[in-house]
Length: 66
Image 1: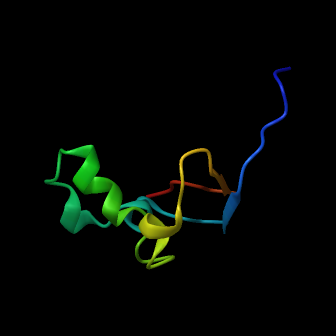
Image 2: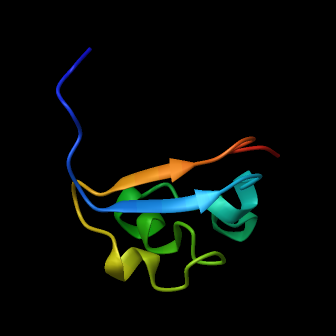
């Protein structure tokens, strides 16, 4: 087992589908710097402004379904 993780935690719950992670309308964006602006925007509209390096994203059952 590795060392314990430390950081701020974002809990997104169960059944978060791929369209909630990144909406389909952004799938043509290939630049990670542009794409990261839209991560979870339909779940937490200001996520990209609030999230910081080292934060942890915790999903529940069926995370990433779709």
